[in-house]
Image 1: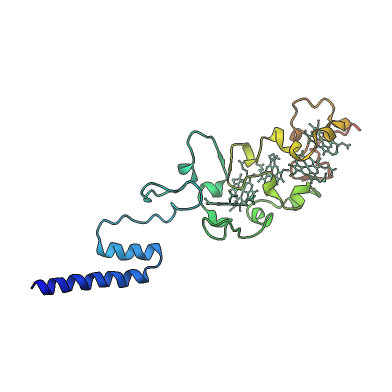
Image 2 (image 1 turned 60 degrees about the vertical axis):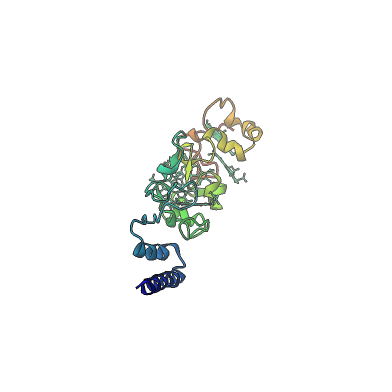
Length: 198
Ligand code: HEC
Ligand code: HEC
Ligand code: HEC
Ligand code: HEC
Ligand code: HEC
């Protein structure tokens, strides 16, 4: 009797070892474990992606990025990032590799500025959308990498800008009250009705 029981346990252990050799990935290991042990928690397929997503027991079902960002900081979230649809831009969830290069990546969902404007702004023409936008989240409106007050003069020397007659007495007027950000009918990207002083 004792001998048979021991044999059964050895057999069972052997079975588990063999089965777990097939279970090289987390989810098949999990399937095996749930076969043998009741009460093994379900694996959360979406919790472990990229940044700050580790939960203490790995069982929280995260549906929105909002749930894992620090609550004390106000972020504007890019809608596909908020929905955790990482694969709409990345090769696989949680990898840094992009599906396709910019600007095509962005034009998949947004209007192509080439169809909207005769002339494109330098960084838009070169397809460098992320020079100005964070693809995930930002504390600034329109996902800008810095506040609009600092954005334009990050690349355009304040000295050069103020040398232009059209820019005298700008005060605290925003650049985008006269200029478009992405392009225009001429390279100066002036909004309709803005007059040239020089
Ligand atoms: C709208 C497209 C888009 C979506 C959606 C998106 N990403 Fe990204 N991600 C990018 C781009 C573009 C870069 C590269 C940024 C650069 O080169 O300036 C990037 C970079 C990264 C990087 C590299 C480090 C960094 O921050 O630059 C990680 C990690 C990453 N993304 C994770 C994620 C995860 C996780 C998700 C889903 C929750 C996600 N991304 C959703 C476009 C996206
Ligand atoms: C999978 C679709 C998708 C892709 C790809 C995508 N976006 Fe978006 N984006 C959206 C949606 C949806 C919104 C919110 C609705 C809207 O305002 O059109 C949005 C909004 C934005 C906004 C406005 C945010 C605001 O707060 O008003 C900016 C800026 C932006 N996207 C830039 C980019 C850039 C840059 C890229 C490429 C790196 C990109 N998007 C790629 C879907 C996408
Ligand atoms: C030189 C900086 C700069 C670059 C480069 C840039 N943007 Fe923008 N973008 C802005 C600013 C500033 C705004 C907000 C003011 C505005 O709407 O013009 C904006 C707004 C947007 C919006 C929101 C429009 C709305 O009406 O809410 C989208 C979408 C967007 N950009 C997509 C893109 C894409 C796609 C690219 C690359 C092809 C790109 N941007 C490159 C500066 C830039
Ligand atoms: C990432 C760097 C970058 C940022 C940020 C940037 N620009 Fe530009 N801008 C360029 C480049 C590159 C050109 C192409 C001409 C050149 O080399 O001066 C250009 C050209 C221009 C021109 C046409 C001038 C000419 O001589 O062709 C205007 C007007 C302009 N930018 C306005 C703006 C405004 C307004 C903003 C803020 C919304 C801004 N830029 C933000 C890089 C930038
Ligand atoms: C009151 C309207 C107005 C505002 C605000 C304004 N601009 Fe302009 N900007 C113009 C006009 C008009 C021209 C065309 C001047 C010309 O034809 O000589 C111009 C031309 C330019 C040019 C191309 C010519 C040059 O001087 O190199 C750049 C770059 C430029 N602006 C950048 C900026 C930046 C950066 C800001 C914000 C700090 C800004 N502008 C704010 C009206 C404005």
